[in-house]
Every structure is written in C-alpha cells, then in structure tokens.
Image (cartoon, rainbow, N blue to C red; front, side, top):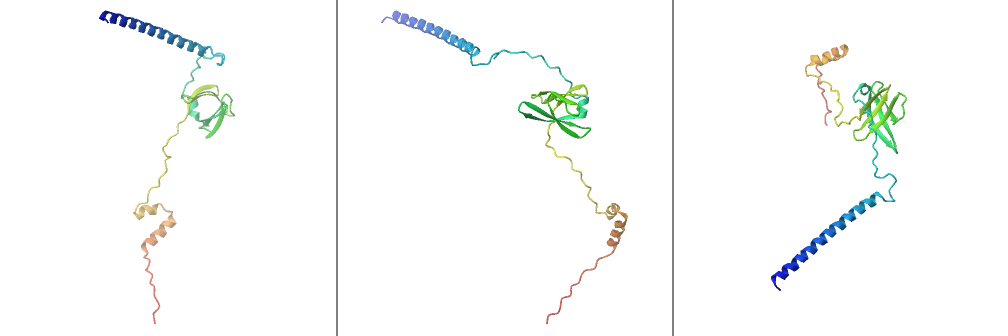
Amino acid sequence: MPNCEIKRIYSNYLRLLVKLLVLGAFFISAQISYASDLAKKSPFLPPGYGVKVEKPPKPVAPTQGPISREIEFRGIIQMGDTYKFSIFSKKEKKGDWITEGKASETGITVSGFDEKSSTVIVNMNGRVERLTLMKATDSPLPVPQIKAASKNNNNSNNALPPQQNKQTQNNAKRTIPRRRVILPNKK
C-alpha cells in the first residue's frame, strides 16, 4: 500500500470520528433537555411545583428595647404544627408558656418565630419587639463562702454572743485535770 492511500484512509477515519462525536454530543444534549422538561411537566408533582412565589418582607421589629428589660424568651416547644414559647417576667419572677398568635393572661402575644436566629416577635402593651432565646451557660452558680475563724481567741470571741464569750474565757483559763485510772490489785 502506498503511503498516500494510508493518509487518505486515516483522514476519512478522522472525519467519521469527528462526525460521530458531534452526533453524540447533540444526542446527549437533547436527552438532557428532554429530562429537564420531563421533571417540570411530571403528572406526579403537585400543581404549582417549582413556581417561586415572592412573599412580602416582614417588618423588622427592634431588638433589645424596653420589653427585653421586663421579660425574657427562655424556651420553645413544638407540638405538631403549634409552637409554644416560654416567656419569663422579671418583675413578677414568674414564667408562662404562650402559644404563637394567642394572647396570654398578662397581655403578651408572640406573633412570629425565626428558627435560624432563634428569635420571636413579642407584642406587649402595644409595643412590638424582637427577643432572642436565652443561652444556657455551663458556669456554676456562685456559692457564698464563710470566712474561716482566725486562731486568735479575741477575734473568735467577738463573734460569739456575750454569755458564750464569758464562758469561753473561763474555760480557756481553767485547766482540765487528767483522769487517773486505778486498777484493782492482782492477787
């Protein structure tokens, strides 16, 4: 076989290979577009699936205002679709579980809850404010310590009532004799 004929066969082979690659790319892109259309037009999806509905932005309530000085947001409970929030009154030193959207006996209403930021919007006496969930701490409560009595009797005597103070002074001066034990004679 002459060299020229090998080049011709080789070039025909390359052209065929390029045509197959172009045809394969076209076929793959057609399959991808068909699959994406199929997912959008599936009879098994609920009506309105994939349609983005823009919600109007909620008004931003101020944080750390006068309400936060009176009450604290301490906890959340979810029962089914209903949320209940633990609101603690600092003045009354009493907590209450308030259902979302319902007013409590104290006149506090929780109107919204944001899971991402752990905040609630609270309405109290016509004022609206955003409260943040209180965080638990691992630090122990402070324990009152009693000062140790010094070795000096004068200081410790001053801490006692007057009658006991005199008794301790008398006991300090008086020496207690040792006990002697007399054993019977052995016979």
